[in-house]
Length: 334
Image (tube, rainbow, N blue to C red; front, side):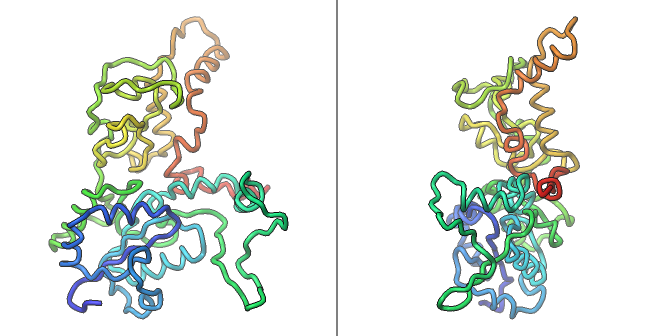
């Protein structure tokens, strides 16, 4: 480890590893990182040990990019350790920021999750019906696994976070901009700032034409091939661009894929799922309402929104840990 350069760390908790790939995708700018930082901890890329981090004075790491949600006690312990050892602590990526895909498990309870994965999945052969335990005694001694926490947490629920950088994963050019800003010695933004994203919606970056029409209903992806160049929402696809922060240059809509909301809610104070549902509902033609009773209106609305087969996974795909729906543990256990 260099004594002359500020230390940079990156950690991978409950996530897919895409954030590490995004960092690697900054390509030759990694040479700039090496020039300005001692990149000294990243279990995915480097062989630094946890004991090496524990031995550092508190605050000795200048910048930590912590990606992934907190699923196990080990995830929480590493978040607490790196928070203590870091001057600047960034929740990096959607899982760290708001729970991400792992947090969808919160709607079913821990036991249901374990039963599904280890007992009931179609591809599983487990005649002894064994489920991994935190402590297991075997012939050669005692094995210890990190215990699952009752529910998945976003990082800010366990430790203080200085900045949040959203995305699944954050885009490389946004990572480059943040690293260059820090390396320049320029003043850091106010604590709590969301980095590498825009205050405007993905729609503001999307090149697709908006024709000012309403969709007859929302479509499931297999029902139609999107017309090139025309707004996906107006075609009836569940694109969350109207309610999602920009900064990604509308990569998914540009590639004929609806935005799934990985950069987070456009309004940080709003419920992301409710905001997305409101935006899509406003884009659907309600039909002729005059003279219709409440039941008829309900049927029309249900039919119009039937293209969203998985509302939770559609509207809260990345954000469940950070919403009012975050903790159903008592309800699930009952």
